Length: 598
Image 1 (cartoon, one colour):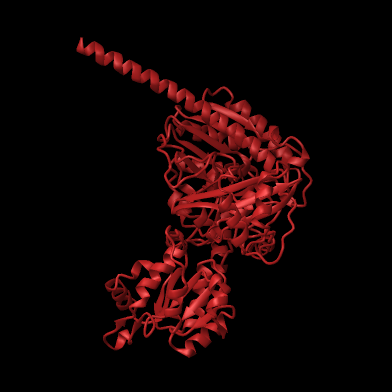
Image 2: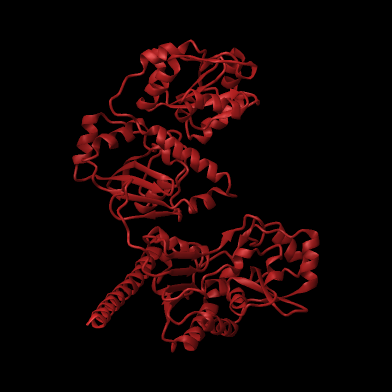
């Protein structure tokens, strides 16, 4: 057991986990009356103001224990409580993990030596002590004039963890969290906070460089060193300054982040934003950076974020983005808007596989024409209701961006009796063939996480016939019907797939550029005369091999940046037109009102 020595170890403590019976109060709650330790309320107040977090791990009835804490006025001091009759070792370990802390920064207080031993076994780095330490702690904790905001931060984290438990994957949770960051250069103004991040962070301090205050301030003044502060905001609250970097000659001297943003992907996003500069990682870190990915659930905003956002204008018009998840890469560079609807591939909570069928014209035309077989298709094991959830046919006076990339990706299957189509797997894989289906189920072929059961496969094979990839002629026929059902007040932009020949090891992508050329030419010939239809040729934004990653559908960051900039210009231009129209309409209404009065 790691003994807590106040004089030596207090400076390490970020969290105290408390027992209740014979610790916070004298007596056992389940056996009758208890008496509050009079030092505890004053100590909790001092700890909270100083910035040390408090939590409870107790063997008790939770409802009864929380009622007693409320009676004593202590409830609001605690977060991430674990109150039940289970053994404490694994519970304490889980609590520390959920709070993104390290065992070496935690003190566990309990009156039972056996509990101290058990917790120390599961958490070897934790400090453990009997309740006698409470009085000494009260004397040791400094009194501060300005209270710390750490308790509020951990209450936000507690709410987030509770919500995250309701999602099938962390990424799904992060996408709905509305994470926004800003990167600003006002480092000298906030030099104390920047210095604190470099000195105090450990789990997300990638360089472990900790200069003296004088040396650090000299770095901030050095014009050869680019420094930046990262602020963060999401739907749960404002986190303030959570990160700092210092970059010189393409090498990161400092790259440090507060643990309050651990798990949000902010460090990887900033690393990508900086262009993946050289970084020598020192010691262990809670996150491993990579030199290729950009988290797509984070939005970079201009200017500084605050906890009191200025009033924003309501959405000027609605915008729909429909296509594969690759499109979301643009949103690393687009200032998001509540008026955006993103209809991309997603992982189904119920089917536990990727649902990509909704981005294919074969599905969209079924929605547009209100196909009588939609309910049947929804119940197939590789579809769900979300594949048919779209705003394409209800939106008016907005923008619509649709990618044609899915047309060349997936295979069509026709129902033998009822003649409707479904989308499944890659275009070159005939899943009605037993050997191909076996490789599909084993994950040797693209399956999006879906696996046939023996029963489902037999039904599928009996009912459907493989049609292969949709022809360019059929794509055009589908979109002729789809566009007839989209309100003409919308401007519709189609992303035309790349026609670049990109070397690839992926069988299904070899020669795909020829299909794209045929599709793009036929599509433009069919729809270029429509006033509300426009085309965006992806080849124009990824015009040489250096713009691609592993195939012609996946681009490097610079290509997505240029594409995002172009899309943003379309959005702003549309906004200016709407604003001008609205101003004219207001003027006309004013004149009419005046004429009526005269």
